[in-house]
Length: 308
Image (cartoon, rainbow, N blue to C red; front, side, top):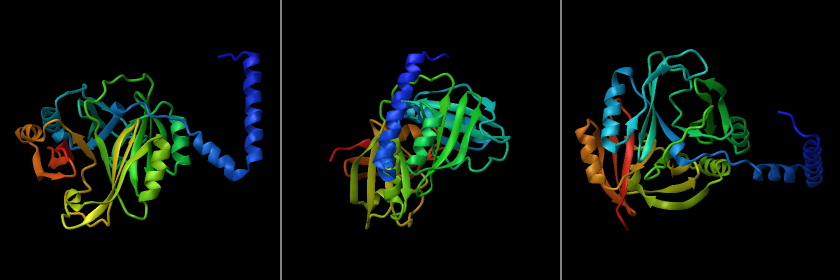
């Protein structure tokens, strides 16, 4: 595309002004200004997908159980290479009113580090998102690569939290969720602040609560307390559990929490469709929660608003 000469001159002039301004500010101030200008790359929470890996033999059972529990539908299953090195997997998207799953049933060994990324976030511009992630303190552990419908990359936040960024050649259009799922992260006290600071900067989100003495029952330790941080952004919700790592099973294995209108009804559907209840429902600070395991091994938290 040709750029009119007047526009080019104006843009060049603005660039010179910016350069002079940054030079006058000094290195530290220039860095702060650059960080403050990190672009908004999130598209919307309905494009946040939990990545679930199951054995090929369990794919259909998982689909039936997950859709039977939450409602919704699955896209057509395809077989594709979704990694930058040779591999083969079935792939489909399970879209429900309370959360979306990107489901993979690998027919070949899974190339490292795939399988450890908990979620995929749609971004408006992959290159801008990668720059923003680096500025915000994330490591790019899988550089951007093409897939059949766009580009992908995997980043890692302080504390070892892996997530995939993706961009589609043809922008998708998904209905908004009825309730927004939460990305449930577990991190040590040593890295919690760095994770929160970095992710909030990257997502242009905000910390909506930081409870230093949340009830330990929420992580299977009813006699203790722990620090719980909740973040909201255009990517969706994230709950950061800051712990010493002394976690009874299955806590720490549930990467996503799904909010439903009626927990007992949802749990009845889950059981009827082959899910196993790992943690019986309990109340804590206005929330009724349970933890279940779906066929194929996927562990999820499910909760409902129970009032104070």
